[in-house]
Length: 305
Image (cartoon, rainbow, N blue to C red):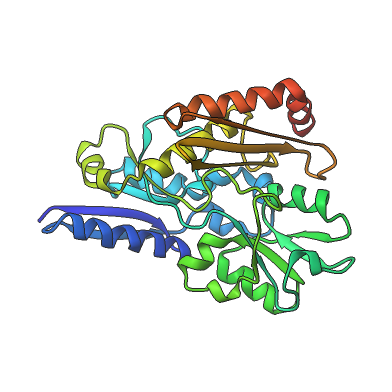
């Protein structure tokens, strides 16, 4: 009997994502066995240092890519914000699935809103993007690194290590933890990361049967938005070492992309926006990045380097 094997990290959220795609593929391909190969990645094992210090988000997918190269898996399911902007040679994103809520979530046991946090309240995040935004807009707060899977982060909050934490709303919603969200942050408060809330399906380039199996999962409107976001990030050397946000929506037939780049302390920030034809998503992302470069983004990148 034909089989499709999905490579996945073994965190609860990653397994939810893999099982979600497993169920959809099984429904679309009757008579095909769809199984999951669970794996622990280097990014899951190193939890005592920020991602920016240990090699970035690619640490979450290298082992999954090796399994595909070796023929042990046909595809991998990723939270798209964790996929490097430059795909490794030999791999391709074969499908981008319909987006869940792309925004950041404010989670706290004591406070209802980010604005309610008092002076010296401790906020946890693993993201330089969120850290830069918090330091710029809420300089009275103390920002501390927060690594680990979603359940681990919530446990640290519940243990009193933090007054609040900022997480992606999509992960909490997918795991049935929507009630932990005290407030969903607006893009004006916290512009999302490129690809946030969307699932990407990665395959080895040229794996035609895998591409055919996942084609029906591709959502064109989500892909247009994410393509613009990722192009913007890529043109600015986007990685978890760069505090950068990019978020696009479709509105009245136009694609509206907003983006920013900042220093980690939030003291210097460049923001911009652009509208255009959704079919021109890649160029729109590149144009917005060029606009920020013309206004000084290269100096920020040089300082980060």
